[in-house]
Image (cartoon, rainbow, N blue to C red; front, side):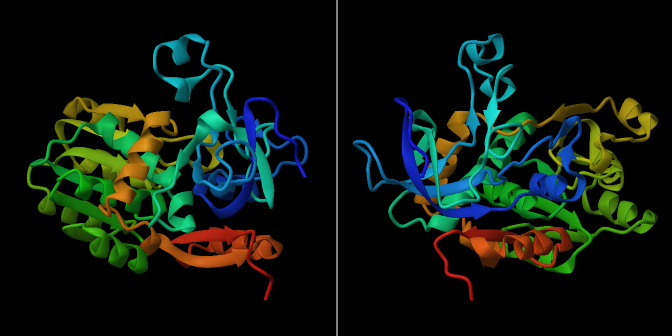
Length: 323
């Protein structure tokens, strides 16, 4: 059982969502230049209940980022770019795939009473979605294309709808993801293909191109679709993590349109607070994203389901007994 330091509390883990970045750790042993050099507990989409201190008994969403608060990016209000950042399930900082952990109290956000523990764990990907949308700055009457209908892409759809954006097109290879996008508020869907058909459909669906495109798939085909879908002068936000740590695209497409490409790096602390407020107000349905549930003892099966992409969000519940 871990012992909390002065600024920490003990937390019993309730739910852990598995993320696309976890799939990179599982299949590649790293993410880009960050590689596993010793044993590491994964899991950064977390909810739990505090078991020590004055907030004992409070259900919380856990911000996986622990910024130093004193480096230039932190002092500039961009703590997601902290030069000395600790992050759950990354580097030497163990994540939440365990029964208990200790974490700084300042990094804990209360979960509203009627929001489930599983939805509480998904406040982190919703926070990432909010940060990506902030980078894209879509207007309510603007056409937005989301390339990639995995959990982050679906969280983007939910957040866009909650912000009042009405024209949302989602493209993905998997039919069950496209169906989920429609159910969460997408106005149009297009099946992604490896030929020109998808691009022709995209351009026909977004007359003149989309003002904002948010790419969450993390592959060059998706990146190419994102650049094609954007209107001249449009903004493309890249959220997906590429396999092999390299991305490539046709420079002429981006150059002739004078597109703005923004890279999305996790989220800011206030994004998790905003995500909790959206869930508390009932403006997003995070429970609808969960398709697989596993006890901690079935962790390998959970990761297999993650990389097979047979559903939407894979959730590990440490309190659940193995069947």
